[in-house]
Every structure is written in structure tokens, then in C-alpha cells.
Amino acid sequence: MRTLGDPVLHTPCAPVTDFGPALAELVEDLFATMYAAGGVGLAANQIGVARQVFVYDCPDDDEVRHVGHLVNPRLLAVDGPAVRGPEGCLSLPGLEAGTERGDRAVVVGVTREGEQARVEGEGFFARCLQHETDHLAGRVYPDRLAGRRRARVLRAAARAPWAVG
Image 1: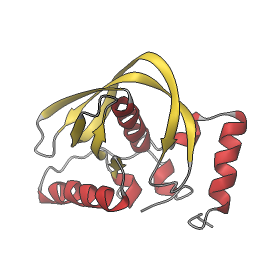
Image 2 (image 1 turned 180 degrees about the vertical axis):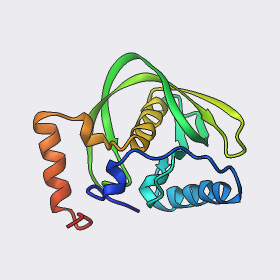
Image 3 (image 1 turned 45 degrees about the vertical axis):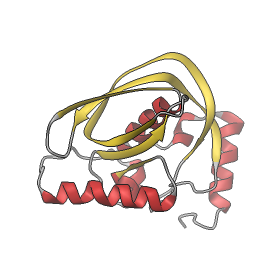
Image 4 (image 1 turned 90 degrees about the vertical axis):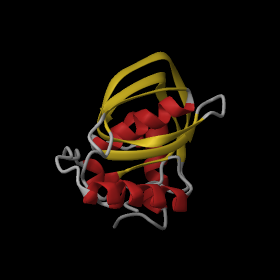
């Protein structure tokens, strides 16, 4: 798992152009890594692969489970009230901060087979969709923070045992 400070997390990922067996294997590897780490979403660059792919197994606010993946995703809409809620990340293990996100998100992309896909989420699942699309654009959630909240997370990350030197 790549952690905050690793350049791959801060560089926009390249689109996927090869929809062969390697992509299917990447999606399976992402799910396995996400489950092993206890996460609800994982982007390819978090395991060092700078390609536009993410997976999710995430509940919404009604505890409805959403499981899937997106290739070459694009955030189509973010709306609803802006909600500040606790947000963590497998690339910043053990840390979280109140991060503002839209309460509804729509993401479009394709499946690993190249079929068109549209995913809509509300509440916590919307947060997950926005978080993972941010990763593929080279952003991590502290990039959305300001002031003391941002400084607090970055100080804690610098002191963490997993900090990139």
C-alpha cells in the first residue's frame, strides 16, 4: 500500500487502454488488497499502478451495500448539501479528518470488459466515490482541507510510522 508522500499518489493516473487479462487481474488485486486492509474503496495508484481504476465495497447511509469497480471514471455530478464528515484513507492509515463532500455523486466510466457504467451514490457512498475519483486525479483527502484541520493531519502523517522519508 502506498502512503502519503509517495509520488504515485500525487500524479494524475493515465487512462486504461488495454482491456485484456491484465486489467481483470488488476481489478481482482484491488479487491483483495482493499479487503485485506479493511477499506471500503481503493484506487489503483494506492498500490502503485498509475491507471484510472478503482474498486469499492461501501455502504450508503441506509446500510445498503454497493460493490463494484470503475475504469476511466469521470465525476459527472456532485450535488446535494455539502456535508463535513470524518474521512480516512488506506494511504493515511490511522488518520482521519472532517472533510467536506457533496451528499450525492454520479460517476461514469466503463467496466473491465469495456461496457459503459454509471454509478450514483448518496451519503457515505457518495463520499467514497468522490474520494476514489480524487485519488485517480492525484489528490488525497488532505488536499481538500485548509487551515488547522489540514495542518493537524499533515503533522500526524509526518510522525506516523508509515511516513515516507
